[in-house]
Image 1 (spheres, rainbow, N blue to C red):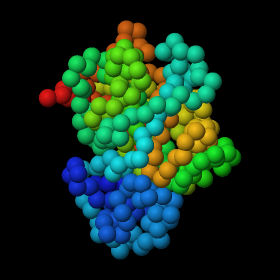
Image 2: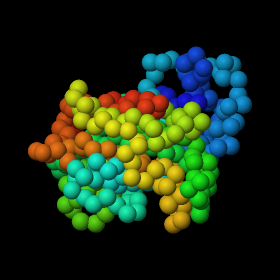
Image 3: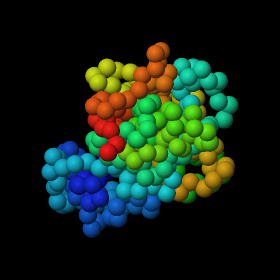
Length: 281
């Protein structure tokens, strides 16, 4: 299934795309897509509904972030071999885990706001993993059984804040609008192998990132299992699994976002995003 949220900012409705591609309103049938609302049990409850009996929504409505909120917004750094090489970093021996502030969540077609004092805004197409049940001390063999679904993410970053201001990376990852997710949460059964998905990002019509998830150093199985050895993952947690080569920081000369830039972000089977960058007021 493809789950989504449609409507004005702050007033989105949970919805589902039916077999004919129509958007059906789930309001009153399920809770919003957050926490227990995206648990494996909640998704099974949606499968049991007669979607054709639900009200149809206009395809012209705004599509919001596919998750209303998240308990935790985790990210994995330097997780594509070619991306690690372009940054001059050694491939990590264990997954590098960091956070984005949950307030960075944004709609897939909303503007990306370049923060005040920003000079090094950057783009990162990523495969997002949404957890569907509590995971603690999970084996790699069983890890995908804890995944509710997947989504497209643009892990927008400010490299100066991230690498030049001391402390943790979270400062360069967390500005409002720095976490566009969606357009859909696609359930795991519809995606199949998460290590066989094309990922790409176009900047102003030029393809700058073009790879696939087979280049990931640590697979989704490895990431979920590894993280669960240190913390309990809970329904609604989202994990951005890293970006391939082609980011602005890795270019020579380096290239960074400026107001008016257009980003088009794609993950195979998970849909396309489009954002325009604007300066902070």
